[in-house]
Length: 34
Length: 429
Image 1 (tube, each protein chain N blue to C red):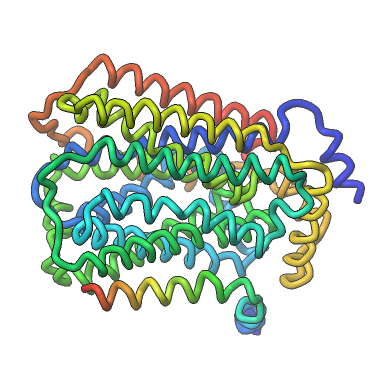
Image 2: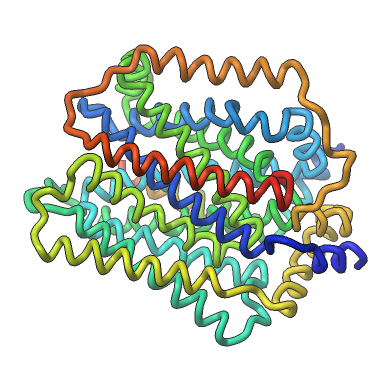
């Protein structure tokens, strides 16, 4: 329960999606370049 | 509110002054971290070099930083703010992906084009600091000008210093557009990596706790990238780990990097990312100093290159001075507290305690004593360095011993100044 509550807080934080999206972009770039 | 008043009234070194000292010390150590890696001259892949260095970073985290705050403290801190474990892993992954992108960028377009692009990371950090954490909100026009102009000066100076090390005949790849995109991607990632840093410190986390998880994210991601993109288990990284004569230098580079990063984290904590990143980006100056003075990399430089070094160094110092004197006003600080309140509300943190932690004041119940296993971990991590060190082989490179002593002295002095200031003002909080 505690774990899912923490996850909900994190994904509900609009700030989280900034670095997470940037990380996905970076991984996509790496895959495309390699 | 009482905590805030106490914080304002505290005598001695200001938190701004402490942040500036930490930022500049970070620059000295992050710049010097490049020096030991120059001793690994054999043709290993960049992934191999990166993986060994990050393994050194991970091991170094458990050497003397363990003495500053023991594992009991670190794990209590982490479990009080569990959500930040995810943020720290995210930051480590961002660092690793950015570092790998720079490898591609250098290969395709060379340092001359790639370097200016990824050095824009401080401006991206400045942007996120303003948009997400209200940094510089409520600041006077003079202070905003100092921070923005100072950050731009440091970017320009870093580019000038980067250009000074270039020479004709550097081999480039055949996909310039891919290289440029990779460099922009690295810049975006290294600029965004500071969002988790700032997030952690607005929540009152100790940088030593954050770095602990950050190094796990960093090592895990570099390992995954090596396995995916560098030939899997056949990567030269795993062969390099068995070359004892070389591994020590990469571990030493990792050790110096983690010290620099710790100070960078404290700078972010006490200055914010808008001011903290540009100051730690002065590492370019120190990296060049090691390259030019110890390894004689500018021995054949012409007047134009020498002029770039002098002008770049002066511009960088002026940029650091501009940021160093841009002290946040009471109004700017009060708006930062709004950003803290957001974190407290969202994650259920204690407001007074968070404000106190964020400003270097902690409650006495956090002062847990070191346990026997702290000393065992310290001894094991140090043992790894000693074991590798006695087997290290110095390659036949020309190095200036006199300058090694001088720059080694600067490292030591900056470490003493940074550590002493942190201990006096915050007891490493």
